Length: 69
View 1 (cartoon, rainbow, N blue to C red):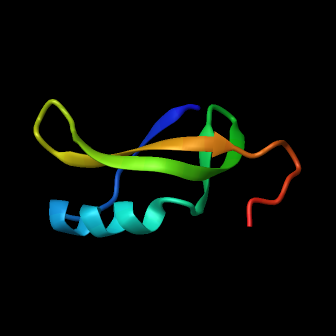
View 2 (view 1 turned 60 degrees about the vertical axis):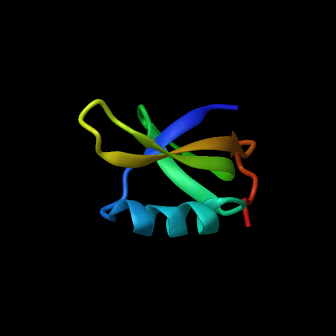
């Protein structure tokens, strides 16, 4: 399952709330030149090399043409 970094304009306290609500939700994101849809299986808060928090999520990609709802 691929891991993806998602960056939200929120402080760490806000990110904790986002992580709790993100698990199990369907997401869409761009990978190269294609729009990928999938479902978040797991998510956690990580820090980049500058100490800024971001969300790293495991995304289960939906088969092409499948509905993620």
